[in-house]
Image (tube, rainbow, N blue to C red; front, top):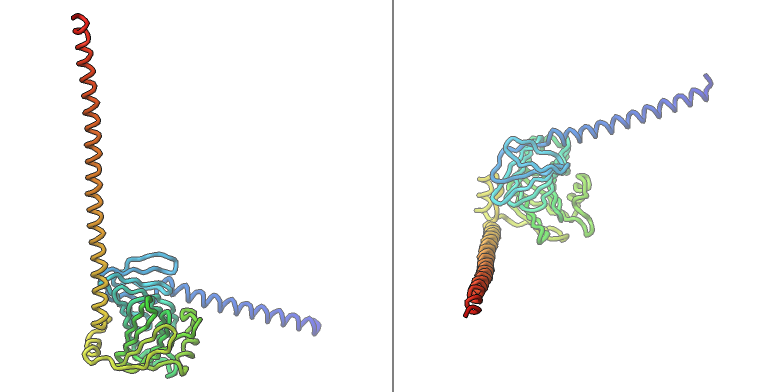
Length: 315
């Protein structure tokens, strides 16, 4: 074999090996993704009311305790309904009433990512997970809303998002959480963990410590943190579920009351419509009866006239 032939052979072997390596990597990641989607990334440990999951394939499942939760699925809770999910990395999320959350990304040995579409969630990140990830500047768990991203470096926090006002609220019960809004024109949902970490370490981010809260409206920089009222904070510490601000609770109650009132009004309106329909039907029926009566009268009159006619002729 000549020198040129040996070179060509070596180049061919190298190209085959590179192709095989690329195929192996592709298959590995595709298998990991398919496994996460098929086997699930978390488990429902507590559920109250009506909770549904829409999977990546579009299948809608009514959730129950001990069911597995899939990556890239959407969790929806009805009024007065809650669900608590423990993910395989031991982090947990409580989804509050009238809320919607995407289970965006949960890869092995990487930070989990959830997206809050509306409503409220409360999350805890296990301390051992924080210890396993050595870099203090990297977030261990991410929460995204339409206008903000939060990187969790603490253990217990609550997030609320109102689509109508495009505002995100953050309460930190323990530990610390960084929050940043996306620049104008940037969709937070397109940001991967690396990009979010870069933003969360920028001067525009706000670091919210234990017992503090902050709010981000639109694309404005998050407000400076302020203390959570002691009584409210104490309630949050006693209860690991979503704890609403009393004012917010009253607003939600009023909304629900208005919804119920509207439902009742619609029911009453339908009843009245049915009554009117019955009245109209009764009127039409009476008209038809009168018409029939008149027809019968005419027939009877005609018969009588026929009977009288021969008598008159005889006379």
